Image 1: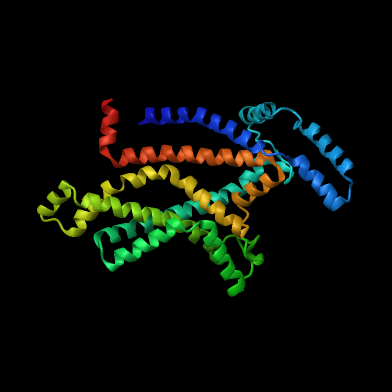
Image 2: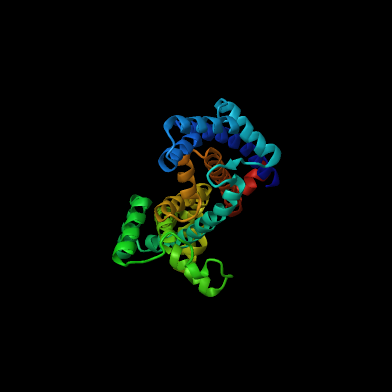
Length: 336
C-alpha cells in the first residue's frame, strides 16, 4: 500500500505541471490584462484621457513584467512557486496570492466537505430505501427527486431561491456569512446558528446534485447486487432481510460510489463555487470570477491549480478507500 501511495503521488507531479501550463496559457489567451483594468479605471473614475491611461497601463506592464512573452511569464510564476513558495502578488487585493487563497479556500473546502458528507449520507440511505422498495410509490418519488437533482442547473436553482428569499420573504443580509453583531465575535452556539442561517441555501443547493447522483447510483447498483448468487445464498441460510441487505449487498454496491469519490470533491467545490457566485459569498467562486474579469492572472492561475490538485488528491483517496473496502484489490496488489 505504501509503494502504491508513493507511486500515485509521484505520478501526480507531471500531471500538475501539465495542468499548470495549460491553465496559465488558457488564462492568458483572451485579450486584455490587469493593465487594461487600470486603464479603464483611470478613464471611468479618474477622468484621464485615453493616451495618458494607456501610457500608465503600459508602464505598469513593464514594471510587472507583463510585456514579456507568455512562456517567460509562466516560467517566472512557476519558479517562484517551486523555489520560494511564492504564488505571485494579487494586483487587485494588493497582497500575496497565498494570503487570498488562505482566506477564501478554507471556507470553500469546509462548505464543500459539508455538502459532500450530507450528499453521501442521505443519498446512499435514500438509494437503499428506493432499491428495497422497487416500483413502490416511495421508489417513484425518490426517483423523481433524483431526476430533478441531476437535471436542474445549480446556478438556476440558486437564482430561484435567491429571488424567493430576497423578493418574496424579504430576507436581509444575503451574501454574508454572519450578521454584523457576530462578525468579529468569538465562536459560540449562537454564532454557529447565525452561520447556518446564512449559508444554508448554498449547502442545500450544492448538496442536492450530489445527493441525487449518489441515490441514483446506489439504487441501480444495489438492485443488481440483490440479484447476485451470494445474496440468494445468504437468504437461503435464513438471514433476515436487513442483514442480507446491509451486511452482504450494500458493501459490494458501494464500490462505484467509492470510485466516484475521486471526482466528487472537485464536483462539490464547483457546485459551491457556482452557488457562491450567485449569493456573492466571500469564497473561491467570486474571487475566480473577479480575478478573470480584472486580469488578475496569478490569482486565477493559483485557484485553478489548487482545484486541479484537489481532483488528483481525490482520486488517490478514492483508490485507497476502494482498496480498503475490497479485499480482492488488496490481495491482488500484494500478489503482484
